[in-house]
Each structure stands twice: as structure tokens, then as C-alpha cells.
Image (cartoon, rainbow, N blue to C red; front, side, top):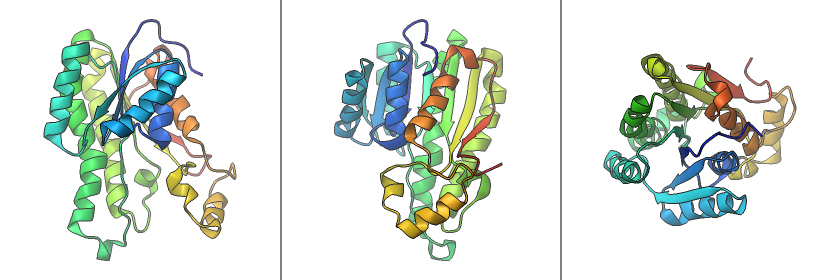
Length: 249
């Protein structure tokens, strides 16, 4: 576990209902953050809230379609009226629509870019200004090693995740003067519902690419986010942390 925050701060996590997002929400709750759990439906977000509260943390649920700029703006306005500032923003929400590029539809391209990349712009645009007034904040974007290496059948996903990295570095340069750090975490292959559905042959081929010879856990990503969100990471910005068992070196 990372160091406990000194005072109650508010953290917002998108895609918090399962997998990596749920682990991040629980980690931040255990560190003393008030966690605003965002998922596509309030019902899904409420499941994350229950998990955070079961760990002794404080949390609230928000059902928001992160690909909808107006929905994000409305939710942000509601949140800022209540809490004045979101201190830590974790852009984690993401989807895949895998297909070889020659067969990829425009809808599949747009859906992945909207959810994975444009949502980062929407939430950051709406929530960063109060951070600048307080001269403190953390923005953590959950990218992927695929954004660094590319992957056949994932041109849309790779483009979105690479875009998140460029967005991270540019925003870090703009906000550094206000003591706001912006970093990216790039997970490798993590044990989630998605990877659990892969066949044994595919999983075996994946493990051959990982020096540590195992997939990561959502908690591995959450621990990194917890550190970046905390008081000991104030001199780290514009960085990409690959948490991948050594797959990308």
C-alpha cells in the first residue's frame, strides 16, 4: 500500500465497475480518498461503491457515458457544485473493438477513439480548472503497452492509447507550473474478465512474451496509480509507467 493521504481528497475514476478500474477505486479508497466511481450505468457504478465501502472507504456512484461530452459536462458540473474540486482524475474507461484494419468499420474506429481517448479530453477539460486554482492535482491516464508497440487487429485501440500518451506529455508541460502532475500507466497483459476468456494456446503465447512468465493483476496497476496519486509523487510528471512484467523494455 502507498502512503495514506494527509487530508480527505476527492478522486474520480472512470470505468470503475470492474477489472483495473475497480482495483484502482478500491486502492484509492483504502488510501483515504473520497472515490467518485464512474461507470456507464449508475447500477454498475454502485457495485464499485459497495466494494470501496466494504474496504472501509468513502465512495459515490455516477452513471455517465464517458464518450458523450455533454453527459460528462453535466456530471462534472454536479460534482464540482458538491465538492468544489476533484483532486485526482483517473481516466481509465476503455473498450475494444478488434478487427483487422482492412475490415474495420468507421463505427468501430469512432467508438474506440471516443471512449478511450476523447473521454480523457472531456473529463480533463471539465475538471482541471479547479485544480489550477488550488495549485495541486493529479491526472493519471491508463494507457496500454499496445499504445507503445501497436498490435495487429487493434489499430483503433493502439491509436487511442498512443494518443493518451501524447496527451499526457503535452498536458504535463502545460500544468506543471500549477503543481499539477500528469502521468500515464501502461498495463501489459492483466488478468481480467477479458483475458480469462482467451484460450489456453493464446494465453501460452502471451506468457512467452513476458519475462516474469505471468500475467499481472489489476492490483498491480492500482498500486502504481496509488503511488502517483499520493504525496510522494509530486516530482514526477509527463512519464509513462509500463506495468507489464518486463514485456516492453
